[in-house]
Image (cartoon, rainbow, N blue to C red; front, side, top):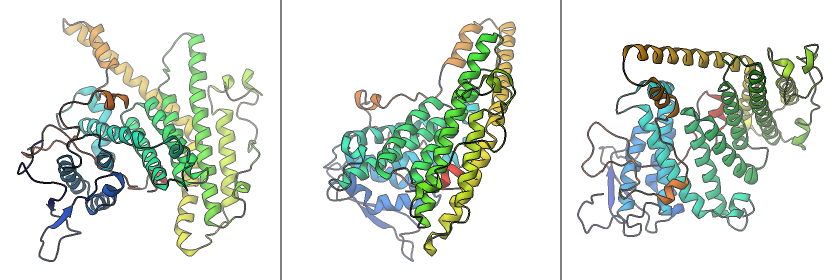
Amino acid sequence: MDTADGNANFAEAEIYLQQENVSNSEGASTPIVLPEIMDYESLKDSDAYKSAKCLMSSGDFEDALQIVESVLKAALSSDQVKGDQLHESLAPLYYLYGTTLLYSVEESDNGLAVQQQDEEGGDADTPSDDLEIVWENLDVARSILERITTINDLAGTSKDSNPMGMNRAIDLAQVNLRLGDLQKANGRNSQAIEDYINALKIRNNIFGQFDRRVADCHYNLGMTYLHLATEVPSDVNDPIKIEELQIKKNEYTNISNQHYLSCGRSLAGVLGKLCNVTDSHSLITIEKKFDSDPPCAGKGKGKGKSSSSTKGCTNGPTEETALTSSTIRRIRENVALLTAHQDPDKGAVSEIKEILDELQETIDEASSEVKVLQEVSALKKTAHDDILASDKVSSSFDPTSAKTAVAGSTVIGFGTSSNVSTSLPNQPTMMIKKKKKKPDSINENKNIPDDASHDTENPTKRLKEN
């Protein structure tokens, strides 16, 4: 990376950025100074970092990205960092850039068309390109945080002895969560589940069951397992294979239900705390039973069987779905009359009750949603096969190799976190979103920032907290 004035000390250099929230009445720029001691905590506490995070939370994504880009460039050139791409002080910047860019993609209309664009082949500057930049930044942030956190930090046993380490573990959980969001957006549900589970383990160890951040992980896992159930092929003719696939679909659907139920229990416990309930567990200690007759009653060999297979329920909701629905309904009844113990918590109490209502709807609609999404997947596969057949007639290339290239490759080369520490490129890891004209001081790289909860009307986003 080029440096302005070869002998400049960027640790003390002032970076002038035009920001509405820090400029004076005449529009003059406010200087942003890097910390004197560059480490993870000091960078997160810097004015530049806080400004970028504030801009991200307010939806000013481009301004936030520009700030982080400038600070990261200066930090890499400072006397303390000395170009070390895995210096601990850079982790907050890597995360903030990655999560900000991901929020930008998620909230744009183009974000919904990423997979379609991947299949058809897009322009150079597409949401897919942005998602790859996001992954590179978040994965580097995770690699650094994994290096500077201990087993005790991750297990939640260092709260009193090492609060700084515990906070780093909390940040690592957030990074894993956003990596899960990214993988889910890219249609890689199995990888998303792995990231969400990593986040859940840390948060559960540190916060316990009754916390909105734990509920958020369960909600995302429930939704992703449901999506995974839709990936089970529905266009198979072999009766034995059909039964095996149905069992697998039911397995994923039932795991989804379990996480949705855990989400509901976590939220009920949070309500118990906010409403000064002596024993929050009393709100979720509910006998699992059906509201009416089991949905599989009288439907052949599924009657009376465990919901792990539900072979007799292939045309309707599984027993587990019905049990989960009835349990969530009873939890909602238990918390319906609760009121906030303190006035400032009234809004949160009302919001959590609404989320529980939406969770009920999600569970009740789960079975039909799986069926619809499977039908859509089957239609897409049929259309894709028709295109390949047409190409076979009209061209001379090998359709078998073409099909392999289309169906077997991933447009975004998301690897594992181990790739970061073992095969770093010679060029700076900082990856910056491509612009129409690159600044002279930036190579073909990209940068990253830290976290925040840019919550919207989406139930899972509404669960997130800083």
